Image (cartoon, rainbow, N blue to C red; front, side, top):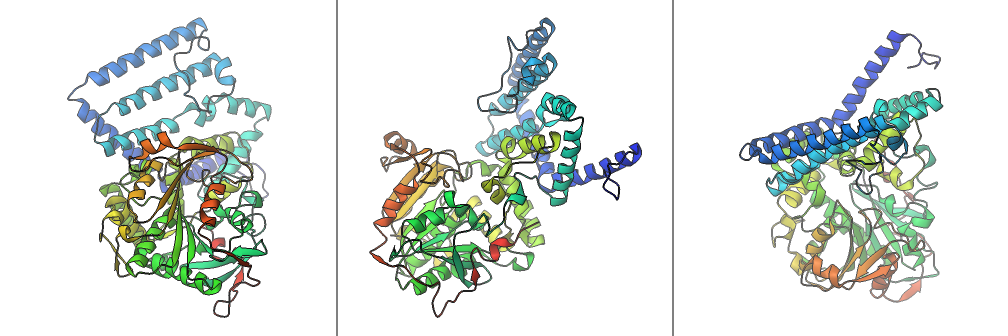
Length: 581
């Protein structure tokens, strides 16, 4: 695109060769992030649908006839100039792709929009009515949605009037900037979702003051500086998910969960997991429980001088924490005084949208790759999660960054979302097989972890479960099943929004809502029907629950660590700074 001096290349053949080369690299990136698998799964699912439909072709015939009639009506409207006055297809509520007025003012683009919507509607309805097995049905609908989303006319410059208009207004500069953005992302191997130059750990992210007081090859333990003169005597240990960086819980001052805990008078410790390399391929589930959580509990108790700790866990950190609680229960160890589970699956019989990736064939194929490379690459994991909301987390950035040449604005959560971690091969294969495929954690004595048979019924620890209404990773009706697994008292709270935004809902902003006090014992639907809706953040509700289990107030510690566990480095530590770029 440019010569050695940075000038835009003017020789046509040189330009073509350059674009061909970079397009090849882009296709490699597409393949590496799962694009080829989308096409394979889509083709496989629709082949099965076509085979089944031979038994009763009337469904296909009816769908195609309806589609042809709708296309006829659309052509008639186009020829009479009434495409926008009497549309035959409109975007569903919440679809922001066609909100610009150019899609309705120009009859050609209005036709393109409506024709695409008709085609996508036909495909999605045929997929919806396929009547396959539940898992195959969900896979068919998911990969059909991926295919349909990818082929939207908004994703191509020549069929997107907003892109063409902007190119005209900027005399082509937007297209040049878009190509530069594309080439930069090809070099990074991922799509930029935010202005990453605007953030730096320890400067404007993860700035809560603290120190690393322990580390091994699995985690660093951070002890945070109290923000009150007195703290509750029982310390709080936060266990984030090991598949993400911990600073989602400590973004900036106004939305930091860690800082909120400190402001409430808690003595806070936090696990910062390692971002493993291929050399750490043998780290397994037992290591994360024993040398991870159990060791963190030991150090936290030693520094605080307390016999019990209040634990807070999130997502897979919660699954690890449930494993640790069962290990402790079998050892008759009461080190955990209470445990909070944030959007955590423990019963994996309903894994939500992630089930489209989970069958014997796909798991064994990925397992072979992971064992060969030593890790499950964080980029691949992030792409899989982003595909669950592809219009919001993939295609909108393709349009804005590459077609319109825009630089995405700074957004702390999206910066964190672009900073994933790897998983060791041994840990990943254990997790995917024993939890997602076989759901062994809920079976009494179904697993042995750290030498202990696992039976969640032995866990008597008081627990607080926070799930969120729109969670597509840990669906709330799936997380609700965990309430019947433990032997102690359980509090269940349902928040608004999704897996991340529903948890990071600062009390100061008083946004959204949550539900409490539903009737237990009759399932999730009955619980929600009888629950009380509360406005604002669930954080204050949780703090009141925790305060009753936090003990009396004592003078806040003056120093980090103790004689056995001395300061290693300031927070946020070095483990969290390791990026995959």
